[in-house]
Length: 344
Image (cartoon, rainbow, N blue to C red; front, side, top):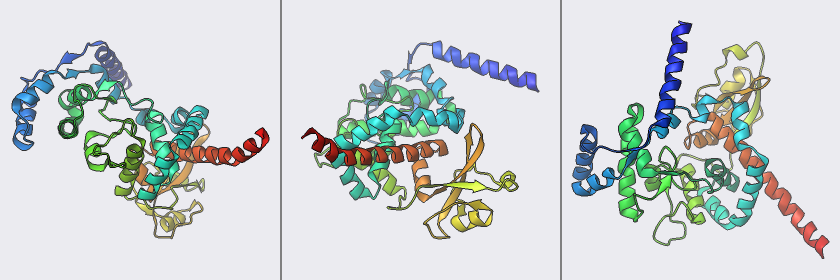
């Protein structure tokens, strides 16, 4: 059994290495699944068949994208390795700088959505380093690769490819030049095409939504995403918790579901402080640190963050970065009058 597992592991590594070395190749529009996709879009979206064929002829399948899909950091790393990627002095400092530079956009988006500005900033910090790293793959290539050459999630990415083509047609975005992540996420907030079409906000009312360089649009769109997924303004996100040693073995802490309440967790022997009522939804989180498992309790707003990326690690990184950036901004604001007075 162990030998077989080792052989499978070796085969997977060899296959991924081979995929990484293969060159990009044009999508073959004669393939049955590609032809079916074109026919579907022509029938349902008022696209001309020749337009779709021309677009998809220009798409390149990228083997490196498939390799990247099979090793996301949220699945591959424990918390003590994942956290240092995002909670760094540089990301905190640049988050505070971002807040100062775009305070009005953040404040307006916060008022509009009910989401505190530090969470809007933290999402952008985790996703794209505050808009600096928005992806180097052509979105058309990424979505076509995953739609037609990644069977595990082909349906999802064919839907996203359809949404991308509709988005580019309706908004005037050049489908052949726009770039994003290896999964086809776009702009500073890394919205997938369906989310772009559904949740993006034209905050400055200039007639179009720009999630790359228009910060009122970016901040308002992230806030709207959270609001539409059930964010409760002013509520806490996460609490530190402890579990008695004799009860820890019976605790799960690995399910990403609001399947408990504040009172049910207390009844099971989980100790934590919360300002929420006893019937407030909650979930227990097992956190793998260098000295063993620690415990946290997430609430509704924590779960909402996981709707952005279905990972407790991701939501904890956003939570910690938000707190650190807010603290840095408050410190800087408090020091500003003193610095000004000293200069005089």
